Amino acid sequence: MKQSVVQAKDIPESYLKYTGRKTAIIISLALLTVVLGIFAICAGSADLTPGQVVMTLLGKGSESSQLIIWNIRLPRVLAAIIAGAALSVAGCVMQNILRNPLASPFTLGISQGAAFGAALAIVVLGAGSMQSRSADAVIIGNPYIVTISAFVFSMAATLVILFLASRVGVTPEAMVLAGVALGSLFAAATTLIQFFAQDVQVAAIVFWTFGDLGRASWPDVRIMFFLVMLALLYFMLHRWDYNAIDSGEETAKGLGVDVEKLRLGGMLISSLITSVAVAFLGIIGFIGLVAPHMMRRVIGGDHRFLIPGTTVMGCLLLLASDTLARTIIKPVVLPVGAITSFMGAPLFLYLLSRGFKKK
Image (cartoon, rainbow, N blue to C red; front, side, top):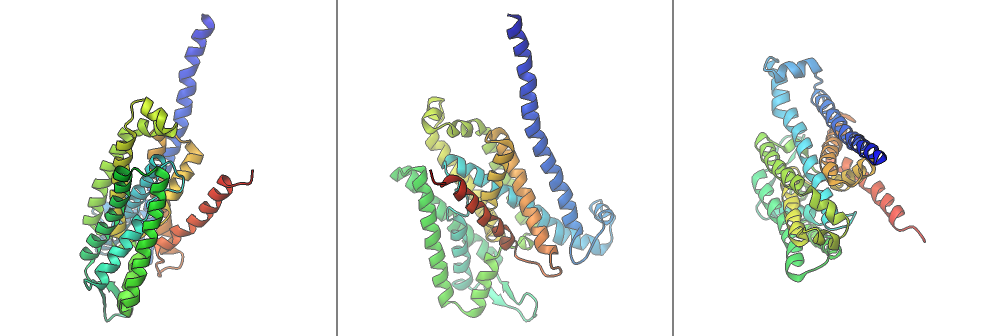
């Protein structure tokens, strides 16, 4: 009896150490993101000191620093943090509910659907144009039409996948294959539009698909923030359900989880925040694939910690990628989508080496 009492006292302490380590990692990543955010605001062609940044945020900076920080750098940094959170948590949830480690907004055809919508708006609706200046000569003449069109077609890709799941009853594995097929279809349609487009329109399409956090405005940041916060709340409320699905669908159903409803809801909300981010900022690949796998290796698969951990990791990865894109060969700003894509190929090779070894 005495021995059992001692064991009962030991269990909570070990459990607190177990959970405390995970919490400490998440908090450390959040603090690192804040530090990197301050560095990102300071870095650029117009170098600013941390003191200037703090004074400007307090409303006591010079007119030029206020213009640079409030109108250019701060919206860009916040857009990187919010979009990184959206793409990473969407990938985390999709990988769980579809039970496929390669599931992500990029591999399910959502990004390709947005690219087709943007190309359609640029060519058919005339949203791409040329301006007289030599720098940034190709511009998006009507970003609102492009954004709306990109959002509509990215959600269209999602609705097709959800229709197959709810009406036809395809398996989660087949849903991933359907996403790959839709991505290929949208990519082919985008290529066809480019073939018949004028040179300036083709350049505008390519410019949009690069992915650019600099195009985010304060209204865009507010919309993304509101939707991502609601999505994170929904995902955290269902964190135990996602843990149950990890044990298998039959086990989850035995525990009272409505797997089909959870899968449809998770796919819809994940696709919604992905579509909004992609429509505002362009295609940013592989954040939703890389961040969940990195955090699983560090804190495990418990979604009580994996969801917030993946969210913070996505913020850090996209912010670091954008900061690197802005500073590596400044004043030239590289496409952030190209920087993030460099992380995708090594991860795919790693997954292949882990999952398809010869027996």
